Image (cartoon, rainbow, N blue to C red):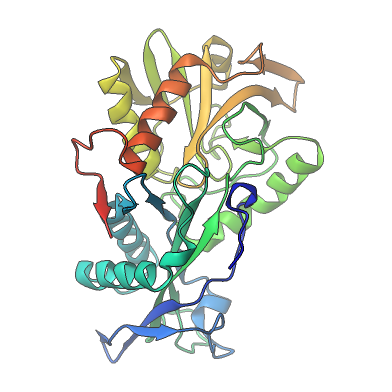
Length: 337
């Protein structure tokens, strides 16, 4: 196997095995190991018609000590079950989730990128409705699957400031909809705005709240945060996905002496931040260098020298060091697999 670890994109790379478990007759079966990249699906499966699909994104990191560490997997387990509850799918037992994670990582251990390459093993748990329905109702059969793939940085810029744009002509999620769940429909709803932004030279978009168009909501596939007056400020909204990375950064911000605020963030406040970023499992932190409000051509410049700000840099380094075992994990966020 000859992989150029430092040149990996954030994309799909075939590995040897995935693990699967099926829910039938009201109970979960045994974990199955598969080398197939495909799933047999009934043409009337609810995942295809009514969007019964929830997924997670998590990472495993190789430390300089040769140990592979999973980061906060229990929070991913909680979140996929919250998503499952939101769209009426069965709960995945914690032991099943953990056993499946350990098995799939162990089976594909050779694909964990070496320490120091800037790459990691991306882990994708998936829960979908397999049972056939024509009426709009939940399935009676489900599949829980985990596959893994080695990945590089989510944004090609890596840990460098990116350009983003504010959009008002698209909404990612309704105020009382599925925005707080990690389900496929939210991402489908974001595609048109995101692809347009890419075509216009931007890395991602900032969606505003769907009801009033006054407040910052999601930053494309990530959470938004801003820094000012020694504060870490991040939006609070029912239509925002509760990011495990954001949760971790809030704790790290407090450890670094910042005050944390979760609240509505008006668009006009963007001009007062000294730093800002988009955070999530895939990107960790992507510092935001420029924000364009495409409706009124207002530019918010947050990085005048083209470099990430000092607070974003400290938070990024602290989080990455914990993930790799280079900094004391006093909160028990990592588990050696």
